[in-house]
Image 1 (tube, rainbow, N blue to C red):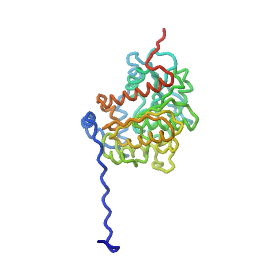
Image 2: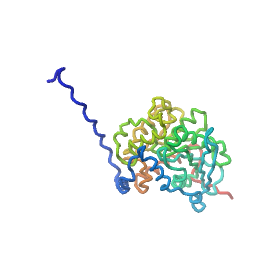
Image 3: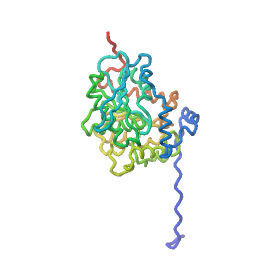
Length: 352
């Protein structure tokens, strides 16, 4: 029995991270085959080398490549950027021969705000959504951190969106049927863009397509700790990316929600959202919480949590059954959203 004179026990060692959910049987072997070197954590020290490797190794199709032997009309556009900033490059594509105003998917690429480009994401988007649903797409080449920190990437995306909607007639798109979307960092940018456009009275959106979005710089959720050192994207990499984007504002109590949408306290008045995430990735809990906050604000959100999926699973394992299910669900949501707006998707009208 102890009393007040009993010496205090030394502090206990921190508890180990809780066990992570197992990877889907189709996904785990694909990750193993990549080798640990392919998914080592990104740190401030190795970030420049990783950016250089990404810029040289990531396939960047040309406009001619994207035209796919005449199946698509593809144009690179240079449009005015934010005040005092460089122009923004937009890559615009649509099914060849389509006429009349098409719905527009305004898309932000992934890459943790520090990597990626507007061209590499387009082949999949063209085949999965643009052609089957008869959409137009604009992919945004926003500036990357740490060379360009917040709010530069978001302001690039906003400037491009404003320009695209103001020039909708010239682009052959319907300014009333714009879906903003993105994956990972691009999903976070899409969520931030919806908030920013709402608060500035900017262009409205029909919906927001948020694929495993990167929403929270604080990294305090259970899944952040649970997935430490696991999968393609972990706590170390995430903190490195947020620090690159936010600089001295990283973790600040007064960080605006446009920098990290999970900070938002008012999610009312936003367009309907589609949110998906893997059960075995660190973004799981923040993405689920974001969907729940939209519901609590009276909004619409469709949430999918793919069992055993790690971050970026659909790009790493395109033939896996869970990947096919995820892509089908996203397409069904887009088709339903467009149909409810009065558009009949999947009908390419060609000039007589």
